[in-house]
Image 1 (cartoon, rainbow, N blue to C red):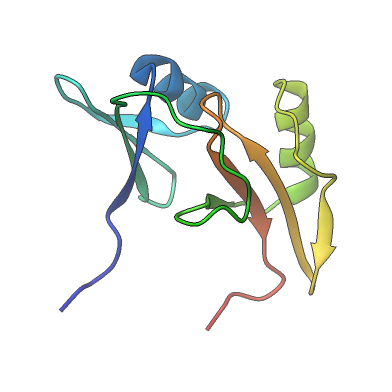
Image 2: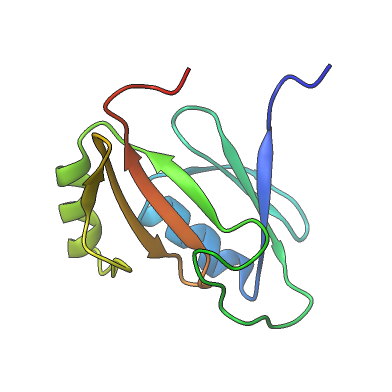
Length: 124
C-alpha cells in the first residue's frame, strides 16, 4: 500500500544555488546532503530532492504537459507575498482569490514553477 509522497525531485544546473534559494528565500532546511544531491525539507516534513541536471531544458509554462508546479501552503498569504516580493521574487501574475483560495505563481531560480497557496477550506 502506498502511504504518500516522500519527496519530489528537481534537476538543477547548480544544485547548491537552488538549494540556497529554497533555504534562504522559502524557509526550507537542508536535511540531507549527499555526494551530488541535497534534500531540503519544509516545516510540515515534505521534501524536495535537488539533483544535478544532465543538460538544459526549455522553460515550461503552467500548462506544458508533465509535472508543472509545486504548491507551497501558507497561513498568512498576504504577509508571505510581501516577504517574497521584498526578497526579489517576481510573481507570474498578481495574487488572486479563486473559490475562496488565495493563490499566486512564481519561479525558482531554475525556472521551476511554484504555487503559493492558502486554502479557505482544506480539500477532503
